[in-house]
Image (cartoon, rainbow, N blue to C red; front, side):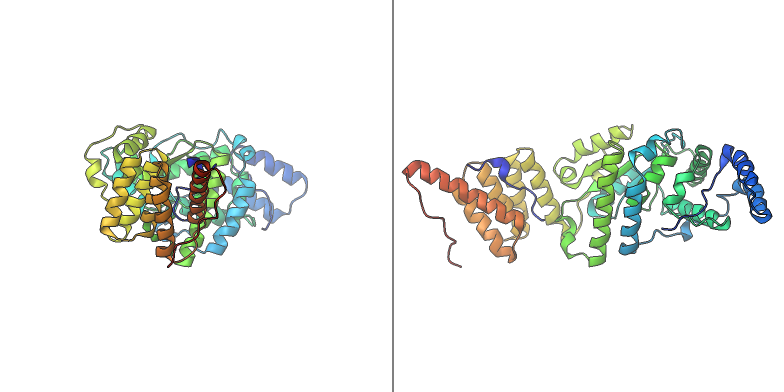
Length: 399
């Protein structure tokens, strides 16, 4: 017999070149290469490298560097990142970077939950919400430019393989200096530009203690299914990368659920700021206003999902009632109300509501059809137990 756990509560569904050597190993490397008879021009470049290295991060214009947003290019780069930045890669680089917690990054695209969390973080008395600084993309551009200058064909992420501990510290200090100039005396600085998930590994390498916050929106939040196709492709790449980082750097990401944020804002923010080592401030609840316009029903639906998962069925029913008051016949709300009724022990009304939701949406939704099948099976089992004989399959009602 089907159980309550069977119900689905979600409503919607290279090029290789010379290996660059920097820092303390540079002199030994030059001697070794010289012994193999490198030509005079190459030797001259290597001899000038340490002096130029000190200027590696000077003269960068971060605001002029934009993170590429071509989905095809980002997908190809993501595959290379996932292949190269493995647990072994990071285990061999535990001594890299600076342990400062000054920078705070929001990872991923600007979803409704990310916008709300950004507003809350920027309003905290110990966090400075900076404009879009773009420091990490600028750093990538600088490293690639440096390799090109010395005739190396490597690009990001392959260029990180030869980044020494000394150079990672130098890069981290360049970032920290820019942030301190942006907000002198601040405990934390939040970059106004969201961090591409492809750059999480680089940030971890340079700033292994810097908070990396990921906002999780349900598939229906913010009408994601109506977004442009390119946006949805970008989001898919980001999700694949986040899945990679969860496996490679377990516990490194601070994840905030949009559903939990709407259903239990105080508890969710308490947990977030505890991870940041900061106290919760009551006034932040006033900053965190629900998204405007058509996103409001989506936020309520997300909250209802969170209530259902936590077993708060009465609260879920009240929340869904509010959605249906604002948008009568909201398909997701009708379906979830059916889920609530089923878990309350009312399969007959659950069956009616789930059928109604599929009629309202007008297109097959795999999870909803699964839920409907579960309810039918449970109702049939109940009838069989009472009558002691098999009954025909429950048919669809007339249109």
